[in-house]
Image 1: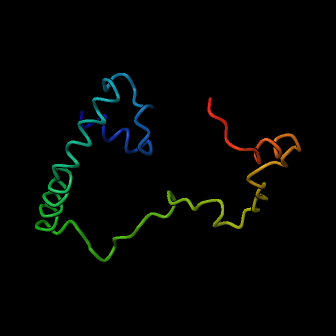
Image 2 (image 1 turned 180 degrees about the vertical axis):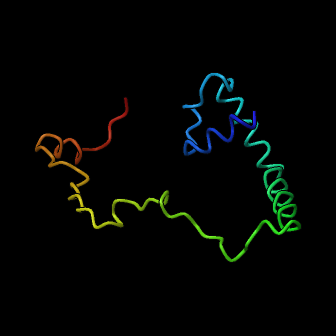
Length: 106
């Protein structure tokens, strides 16, 4: 289960691409979401960090964000703006006459 979760996260969170060897993607995703809600992943991270800190394995001055996977929206890059079409089309004379008449009961 953990291998399936880590595989899906490494694949960018595309759960439906999960290979069959990990079981149904819905089961892996549901277990992941359940563990997130219970705070299990946060506890695991804190525990692993504490173990590495006690052995001197973490240099906190080296922490950074890897910007190679951060994508900006196309409008942030100056993409051309699409012209907006008007919300309604021109009204035909017969539709205008019918719209101006008294409401009918059907």
